[in-house]
Image (cartoon, rainbow, N blue to C red):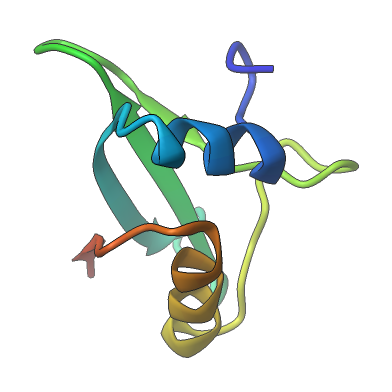
Length: 82
């Protein structure tokens, strides 16, 4: 679950419990697609990528699409790394 990435259902539960500390959107490997990672808990926590059921990293084609996903799971905002 969290070892390799976090699936949408778990992310939704963590958001409801106010356990998500930070969210970061960045390009995947310098390509055209975007990915979303979250950080939980205290200082020194690592970034955990959001994954799909089949892939280790879920990707989105645009910031608009990732914004709709974030809104749908209850995230109030995220930082974007260009």
